[in-house]
Structure formats: structure tokens, C-alpha cells
Image (cartoon, rainbow, N blue to C red):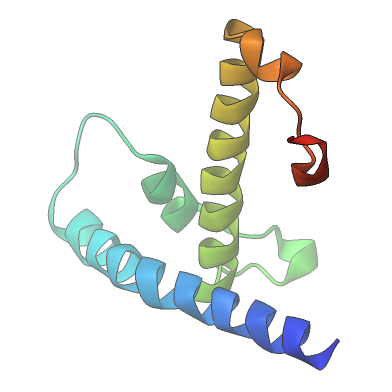
Length: 100
């Protein structure tokens, strides 16, 4: 059980190591240039909590979490769309023990 927690901790740390440089670069770039179209990340950088919740911007950790959720959702959506568009996938066995 402890190994699973350690693995989860490493996954979360890797997400941060991957996304934080991108977040910081977008933050620096958004102060310099104003683009016509905003990315999802740009919109997160502009968000802030209401006064009742502290009137503050999102932290880097919160932005990493939201970006990770967004990317995971896109992957799941693409996977489900592939299964729906290609019916032969639904006819193949899912469990390795069913493969014989």
C-alpha cells in the first residue's frame, strides 16, 4: 500500500516538473504580449478567487492540478471516441485472461 502512495507522489511531482516551466513561461509572456486568442492556461493565469474566499490568484499548484485534469480529460475523451468510432474494439476481450 505504501508503494502506491510513493508512486502517486512521484506522479504528482513529475506533473509539476513538467508543467511548472510552461506555466511560468506563459506568466512571463502574458505580461509582455497580449494575444488575440487565449489558451486554457492563459485563462487560468487570469482567474482569481472571490473576496469571500480570500481574493487571490490561483497558486501554481492549483494551476498544475487543473491543467493535469484538463489533459487527462482530453485523453479519456479521445479514448472513448475511438472506441465508439471503431466498434471492433468493443468486441475484443479486455481481460488478459480472456485472451487464448
